[in-house]
Every structure is written in C-alpha cells, then in structure tokens.
Image (cartoon, rainbow, N blue to C red; front, side):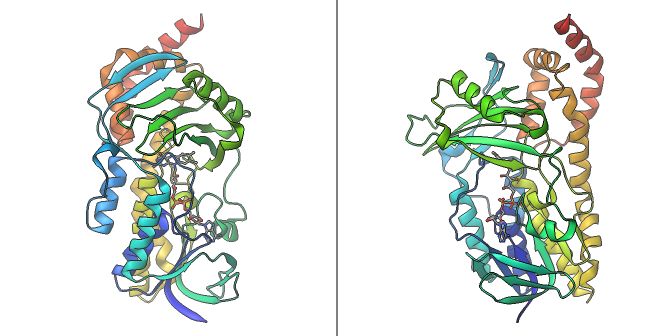
Length: 386
Ligand SMILES: Cc1cc2nc3c(=O)[nH]c(=O)nc-3n(C[C@H](O)[C@H](O)[C@H](O)COP(=O)(O)OP(=O)(O)OC[C@H]3O[C@@H](n4cnc5c(N)ncnc54)[C@H](O)[C@@H]3O)c2cc1C
C-alpha cells in the first residue's frame, strides 16, 4: 500500500491544476489518469480571459501562446443570416487540447506529483480511503479529488450516476485538419445552430475546429444539426470524422463531494450553461479543491475538506446559477428571434455577450441589464410570432 496525502483521479485541466497546487504546498500527491499523455479530448479548445487568469494564478506565469492563437474578431450568425462582425472583441485564444493538456499534466508531474498516468482505476473504497488500480496497486489517501471528467467514476462511486440525462448537454465536432484554414480568420458563432446551444468555427494554426452543442433533451437529432451546420458552412461532414461528447452545461452538483472526497471540473458539472466554457472553471475548482485539502489535512481533519471546498466554490455556483436564470432569454424558442434582433441592433448586447465569452464580466452584472430589456424582448418575440 502506498500512502498519499492527496490522490487526484484525472489529469485534465482540473486534475493537473489540483495536483500542481497540492504538490507545490508540500503534500504527497498521486496523479492518476487512465490515458497516457498527450491524449485526445473532444473540445473547441477556446481559452477565455477567465481561464488565462486562473492558469497564471495557479502556475505562476502567463499561459503560453503563439501570436496567431489570439483572436479579436468574432463573426455572429443567426439561422444563416449575418448578425455582425465584431473587430475589437476581448481576446480569446485557440488551443489544441492534445498539446495543452500534456503541458498542464507535465507541469504537475514536474512539480513532484507521482505519475500514475496510463493507469485506470479499478475500484474506489471510500470507507477504507483507498483507490485500487487495474494493475493491482492499492493507494491510500487523506483526500481524494475526482477530476475524471463528465463520466466521473469518483462521482459514480458517491452518487450512483455521473449526470442527469435530462439536464446534460451534448456536443459534436470535427477537426478540419489540412483543410485550407486561415488562422487569421475570425471566430464564427452561429446562434441557433442547435436548440439551446450554438455552432462554432474556431480557425487554428493546424486545423479548424467546427462543432455544434446544446441541451441533449432539446436536440434528439444532434447529428442532423451538425450535418445542416456543415452544409451552411459549405463543408463536407464525413460522418466517420464527427465525434461527440457529453457536456455538463450548467448541471452542477450543489454538493460536490462527500467528506474527504471532492469533485472538480466536469465531474462537478462546472460548465457555463450559455457559452459551454469549462476549462477555466476546471482549473479554478482544481485549485480550490487543493486549497481545501491543504486546510483540512493541516488541521488533521481530512473529512472536513468538503466544507472548506463548498465555501470556496460558492461564487462559482452563484455565477452558474445566474447563467441558468438568463439562459431562457437567449435560447427559449419563443424569445430567440427577439433576442437575435436585439443582438443585431445593440452593440452593447453584443459586447456584453463577448465579454461574457471572454470571461471579462460576470453574470450578475449582465442580469440587471437583461431584466431591463425583457419587456422589449417579449414584444419582439410576439411580433416575430404573429
Ligand atoms: C464538444 C465540446 C466542446 C468544448 N469546447 C470548449 C471550449 O472551447 N472552451 C472551454 O473552456 N470548454 C470547452 N468544453 C468543455 C471542456 O472540454 C471541459 O469542461 C473541460 O475539459 C473539463 O476539464 P476536466 O479536467 O474537468 O475534465 P477532462 O478534460 O475531461 O479530463 C478528465 C480526465 O480524466 C481521465 N479519466 C476519466 N475517467 C477516468 C478514470 N476512471 N480513471 C482515471 N482517469 C480517468 C480522462 O482520461 C481525462 O484525462 C467543450 C466540451 C465539449 C464536449
């Protein structure tokens, strides 16, 4: 039996951040991932100001990018109609998760976390506080951090199921590698390319990532939405190359763990229900969970880790809750045309949306402005219907 202060299951942005922060605080940390890095992860790879801020705070330096990765032009569309090209948008950055996650995991291992990547978890025993790996090794923990993504085995061991199918989102993507892609081209967002969601085109240095995503319950035929979107873009959607994945999309767990077991990132449902951003919240929650583990272990009471973590996570939960309140104004089919018109006419609304996407403004600030607009949105929606 090997003993660790903290075991982190999952070495994506949430797990790597947690393992790095806990290791740097002097704790003995095991970092487990069933995959060896680099590994594929289906994702748009768009990095917001929020993600960059958390990265710099955790790892102590600015996130590395090439100049071509920086995007300040965004092209909005609604049902095949252009809604405006914005040239002075707050900076968004493009990445490939293959590279970014290997870099994050490498930093956690470089800081001294013990490397258990390429090894799957066979069994978690919360009473004995042990994790058994498929190879037979048994690891003992003080605090366990479940950073194992949307299908979280740690969440399943605690709650029986990792997510609620009625509330989860789903995304489909293709990587148009080798296609004549112009990395200087704008980011494209198509509101309504999926129900309660949107479509995206992220031009990158080596590829263009194209996808649609939205609430699963509202999109019974997401493949059709993807094929239609590819047709709008003039792309051949070869079914074989389309990949899909669940996305918690705001279905966060109000109680993200139990005693000495903490859930972070997608495992805790920490994804923005409007923009689908999850990387920034994954890093932030990973760091907060590490801090909670440090406090609980420092007091000799690992079982209090969850209460430390819940307190620290409150502002994130509040933001996601507000975003869920705002979401119908944007996505409810009856209000959608009204929102689209207001969006086209109002540069304030477009900039608010972009500042939200870039993680430069919080939902609380937006909510007040939207509530003031609601009567006008309602009238526009009625006009659009009749
Ligand atoms: C189609 C799509 C597009 C997206 N686009 C964006 C975007 O552009 N920008 C953005 O910010 N967010 C985006 N997201 C959301 C983002 O991908 C996630 O929120 C983010 O990856 C969460 O990070 P994580 O570390 O919690 O989980 P993950 O990145 O999923 O990492 C989990 C890790 O756990 C490992 N693991 C899983 N199970 C086990 C196990 N049993 N044992 C050991 N290891 C295990 C996995 O191998 C993986 O490495 C998108 C999501 C989807 C589906």
